[in-house]
Length: 161
Image (cartoon, rainbow, N blue to C red; front, side, top):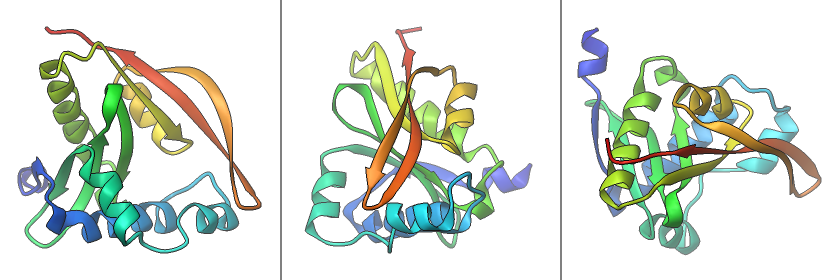
């Protein structure tokens, strides 16, 4: 139980962006996966860096989960209630970090007057979003280079409670 208390949820800053790229890389490349190694390499060949990464993140509201030594997860909210990123390091999966990050996103969305959250969920993220009350709207296939990756468009209606 004290493990959860050691993880703090906070807003990300520009100084976190390289760590966020590392979390994404770690989650996709080293975590449990329904995707092949070739698919995972196409999705995240290396940790993202550079101007495009910074610009994409800077336009969103991002929450990070961090312990005393590293960022262990993050989730981001883009325009129109779209959850763009949701990644948890393999070492922190199953600890409640996803739920805590999601709750921060939903609360912010409600404060912003959003009535719907939506996401393109990977095969690994789909059960976690379903547990938060998201429903699958449609299954999609995304082409990344020569690889085809299945994913789900999911949504959840939210209101001010």
